[in-house]
Length: 352
Image 1 (cartoon, rainbow, N blue to C red):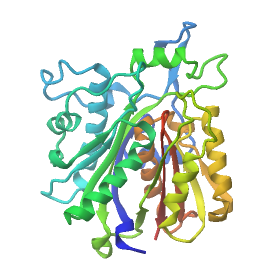
Image 2 (image 1 turned 90 degrees about the horizontal axis):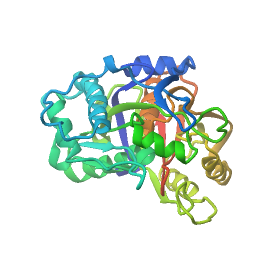
Image 3 (image 1 turned 180 degrees about the vertical axis):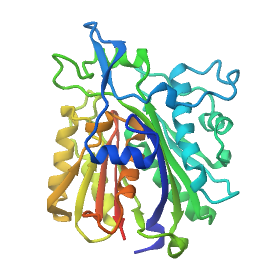
Image 4 (image 1 turned 90 degrees about the vertical axis):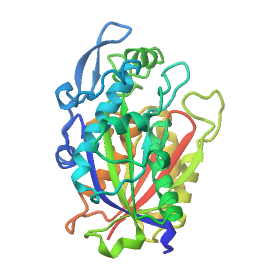
């Protein structure tokens, strides 16, 4: 396998509704725990909206409140969430080495959400204790697939710069009355009488990645990430077009093309269980069945975390890495991810 087609996941940390660390969140997920609860937000029928939220007391305070005075409250919460994850991973990073951060942010939904204000990475750098290369860092406001797009950016950086480390991550939150009211008006929030809705969550996750040049110096087991696959879907949730929902299949084919020939044992999906995502996932699995074991293990993290949005893919990668031990049953994993709009992505991860 060519060096340029693989990198390694070295360390990960997160904050979710299930815990303020990778180990706690993973243990709760494995135990099937979920902490959905009614919130102070009301839907159009004046019933409380259920969400899986991070407790306010688990979030750090903003260091420079004046700097954030003109920043929307949802974005302030995003900064708090991701800085909490950053502080957890700080001790796992190479000493005195600054590096870029490729960060997935909430999907910008025209007419339903607000775009980020200012330079998110600069704002995060002022809050975080981790030294970041601001000039080479990048963000993507494309939601669930953003973490896999961040992997692609890390691949490019590690190859072009000759450096051996990079950070990727994702952060999202539905803690926003405007966004919730719009989603509720669309009939998308799970509630009494709504059969085709989802449960919102929130969280943040940071991953430390290393180039294949230093593979032999990394501790085992090795968590190998292959180059991801991408495609754009014309028949997405907010599209008026009718198509055959083939983009996810294209992304999976691309992700598997340059990877190991061993069949996939475990599937991980960011699907929210809304019906629009079920068709495309079924098509992707059917058309790639030759690369998938018949006793495929299917994992739906939204069962426990709610929809983590832009944090979904990084959290899934963290769950795979946390379970990567010699006793692990599954060694060959596939992540399928779909944003609300056009972006579709897939990535293969092997444990060695």
